[in-house]
Every structure is written in structure tokens, then in C-alpha cells.
Image: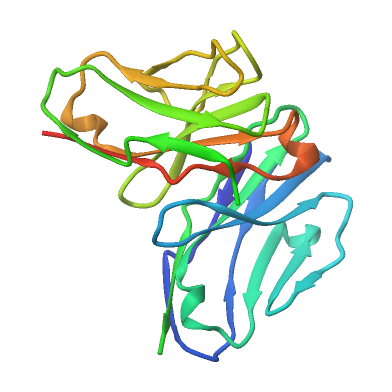
Amino acid sequence: AQKVTQAQTEISVVEKEDVTLDCVYETRDTTYYLFWYKQPPSGELVFLIRRNSFDEQNEISGRYSWNFQKSTSSFNFTITASQVVDSAVYFCALSENRDDKIIFGKGTRLHILP
Amino acid sequence: EADIYQTPRYLVIGTGKKITLECSQTMGHDKMYWYQQDPGMELHLIHYSYGVNSTEKGDLSSESTVSRIRTEHFPLTLESARPSHTSQYLCASSEFRTTVTGELFFGEGSRLTVL
């Protein structure tokens, strides 16, 4: 069965520090998709990135970067030079090719302190 | 910006009442979902739909029901609300196969409190 584990329930860092959010997944499929979503205090989840299982290239988007490692079943998310606006709950998610359901991890609440 | 709307945003009701949470999207998406988010943040899929007249139960058993009579509308109903139903309910939609587009569009959620 598919499973997503975000071991860090809550993280606090001071503004401008770098922070990495961990995500470990389990799946029996060889084809699957990984996602990160951000949930700001307003409540609406916002899509950040998708990766398919055949694309292990790391990705960078501004201050955000993602490290996908199939060998360790991890898809970690790093924010560089964090800002107060990055404070939110971040969810890692997984979808197997056999269906279209996206299963979410329990989320990591990130506090960026001024 | 996502064009998916949920009403009401907040609802406080007494035990035994019937409630309907509305969800509408103007993007013409075939697939729609309801997630329940508990106070510990975890998101659980409770219902989803592939299109008109299609409804499926998600991974978390729920006493709620859904209907999909129109593409743009996916309401969730509780016939008799109980305090255990207190939660945040999030509606989402995606264009055809989520695994192709990679993106769920979420509404802002409906926070339900049952006294």
C-alpha cells in the first residue's frame, strides 16, 4: 500500500536560514508521482511541484529546491534563505499509476521567525 | 488562482442537524475530491468523482454522502451531524487524470463545528 511519511511535525527557524523538509514514501508501483503542496493560514492548499518516478533530476525554483532519491525513497524539499511568508504547513503526497488518488503525508508545520 | 469555491467557510450547528457543504468549480474539470482535515493537519480522502454521475468512497470511511449531477458541482451532505464530524472539509478538482496534470486545485475549505 502507498504511504507517505513526514517525520517532522513542526519546525521553527529564524528568517534567512535554510530549512529542509523531509518526505519518505512507500509504494509497490514502479510508476508513481510525488508532489509537494503548501497550506498557508488561509487554508487553501497550493501546488508546488510534481515529480514522476522516472525523473530523478533535482529541481530548483527560486528559493525552493527538491531532492528526489529513489534509492532512499525520499523526496525532500529545501527552502533557501527562508522568509516569514514561507510559514505554512507543507504536505508531501504520492499518487500511484494504478489510480488517480493522491495520498498526503501528515504535513510539516513550518514557522519562520523574524 | 484556482476557480473553485466552497460555502460556507464556517458553520456551527447542533447535533442531529442535516448539513450540505457546497463545492463548485468553473474550470470544467472532470475529477473532484473531498478531503477531511483533522486538527492534527492530516488530510484524508473521503470521496471522489471521475465525472457526472460518478462517485467513489475514499480511503477514510465517512458518514457523509456526495452527488455529482453537474460537472461543476460536488456537494457533500451529512444527514445527521455529530460532534465527531467536527473538522475542516476541503474540496479539490483536477483536469482528467491527476497523474498527468499533476495538480489539484483546492478550495479554501469549510470548517464545520458540531456542538
